[in-house]
Image 1 (cartoon, rainbow, N blue to C red):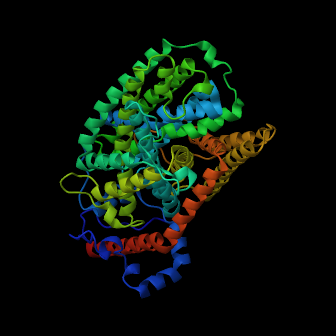
Image 2 (image 1 turned 180 degrees about the horizontal axis):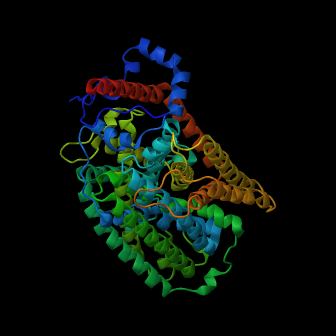
Image 3 (image 1 turned 60 degrees about the horizontal axis):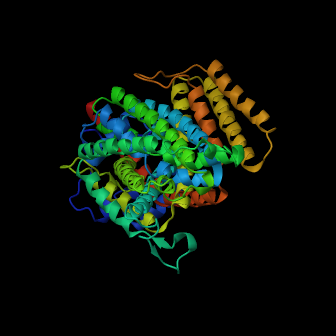
Length: 585
């Protein structure tokens, strides 16, 4: 069923409060007016959950009515040039400069180049899916808005929690890596500027105050101006690309082809394990989709900006990884600052300072774009009242969501203060792959199902084929994670292929993209689903345990607060819509 409309686009009925620190700012909904109301709301949880499970938002709601919740509009100031450099700035950072060394040494060896190619293919498929949605639904909520429209409120909320987790821990990972390279630039070891506290748990006892200070500085830039952040980002990104070119040219002068032997010392499993972790290196492009609301011409600028940036990034990653492996045997590659230490190992100690400076520039732009993107996600989520509407407010002067930006970066700083990169990167990869898989599913649903138009027969076939595609992909991932044999793939792979083929042949598409669409649907999103599941099967069990704990926390919050707040908002909007309809008659 359709989700009831939110407040009207002219802003009537929206609570505007000057004070940002009262209960009304954080819990203004009817269910929280009194303990009696809250008790009644909790008793009605099953019925409300069923309503939210069935509710699907309308595009008009996401594009027009949700914006009114922010009181002021974001400024449309970005072009494809801004988006392209936002993409480059968002992605090239801690992944290539830190995780390359970690995964080359522990899991892939010189075959880390193949790991980057596999991750890059998966990321590019996700870019296509995101691009179509960003053109059709250019809202600040990004994948959250897309999932609300196609898969409903509950799925969107679960994804939203993981989106926020992705950004917070991603920013924390980059901030800690920034400290490591800053130490190298100052001719110190990576952990020299961290504070060791022996009474804390082993993996959480190196405190990073520099990461906290960095997060505060980035917050100041992010809240000041989106266009200003864009200018700073592409100037820094151009300098960063210059350093990357230097690393490649200078590194290849010290290349030794013998270092590529053995090429894959850990076998195929090591390549895919590294690929799953290195997917973290491609995280960030989804932040560009959240800028659609601030883009002058989304239908032209978003495809050019997103696809071009991803091509640049994938080529840079593969060439950089190959250069590193040619410079040193994989057993000697440093895990914390691989490129800087590689130059020192070949006798070019001075070059490590250029590398460290380039890494710091890159990670600074990653943090900046991440800060911009995560705030817009939280803003749109708050517009639906799944979290407090206080986070949805847009500053009238700067045109930026100040509350959301400051809150997200405070959480980033807290995690960066305690948590090491290895734990963060694995957990981040799970959240990201999970979200990208859901966006691919949502794209198939968007193309093949329109309420009131798709026949029940075609709807049922769509459900069956989607179930088989996801089920066979899941089975493939589990078999890969638990067995060293290959016979199981002879069962799961044909099921996936035949299900996708049957969907392509037997179910007509119900909706065509208005401007630009993903080619070869359902094959592209189906392949994206399969690859994302497969990479999930390569991540360690401890990371899934942390992911399960986080998901459990999300569900507790949803059943106690988010469900009732969003339900009240939907019902209030439905009543207002009915009143406006009656008055117009």
